[in-house]
Each structure stands twice: as structure tokens, then as C-alpha cells.
Length: 175
Image (cartoon, rainbow, N blue to C red; front, side):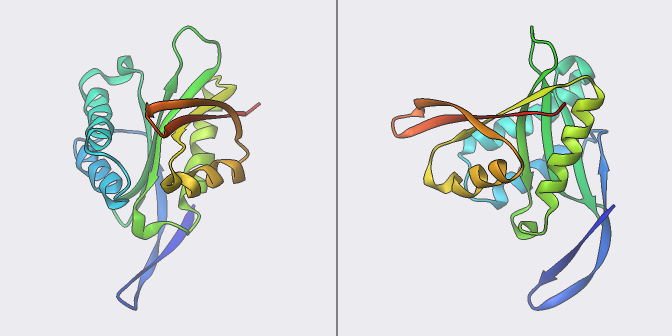
């Protein structure tokens, strides 16, 4: 279990352990919205999509194909990942989302959340994880994060999202 210090307005709040859970709760949709919006990086439709995936999981359960891992500290969701097996493949998974509350970045939470997600995926027979991200300059830190975590750039799809915003696909073998 990891512990992150929280510092707000020059006041240190005593640290609490970070707990990871896979169960999706009805309150998670709003937590995901808050985390995604805290970055100021995502377009409105991306925020709505992130929330819809939580709602889809709540509605359909495992049949949705979406799995989640939530990082909580002191009863507050501070980060999450969303992933699932890629249909018609053997042991291949997509990591759809991984995000940590903007105020909690730089504390190793994202790295641990990714590591825990990889562990869950491997436990389900997953062998390879794919991650898509944007080529926009605002995503430089995201791409560096994936590289530091052992993911390699596998593909570049020019102007995929819109002119000037290409899709970069990262991959990592976890076995």
C-alpha cells in the first residue's frame, strides 16, 4: 500500500494509505468526471465518454467489456484506470483511460495505478497492453510517462483525431 502526502495552500494534510479497488460504485461516474476535468486537457466529448464508460459498466456489469481500477485515499477517488480485453484477440488488452487528479500528480500514483492495472490484466491472461494517445504538445508528459513505464511507440496515425492531432499507439508485453 502506498501513501501520498497531500499539500494544499501550504498546509500538509497527514497522509493516508492509497487503496485500490475494482468494484465500480454509483459515485464513481462523478469522481471520474472530476478527475478528467481537473486536467483542463480533455475536450467536452472526451469527458462525457469517460463518464459513459463508468455508466456502461454499472448498467451491464462485466458484459460491458470495461474494467476499472480506482485509487482511493481517505475515501476519495484520486485516480483510476479503465481497460478491457480487445475483442477477437488472445490476451490483448486496451488501456482506455488512466488519470490521476491533477493536484495529486507527480507523487507516483499514476505509475502505481498502471502497475496494479497490469497486474490485474496479467491475472486474467492478458499478455499485451495497447494505449492510444494524442500527438498534441499538451500530451508530451503523458507520452513520457508511458515510455518511463516500459511502453514503446508502435504506431503513428497521422491526423487521426483531427488535422494536426495524430494518434500514437504504445504497446507493452507484460509476460
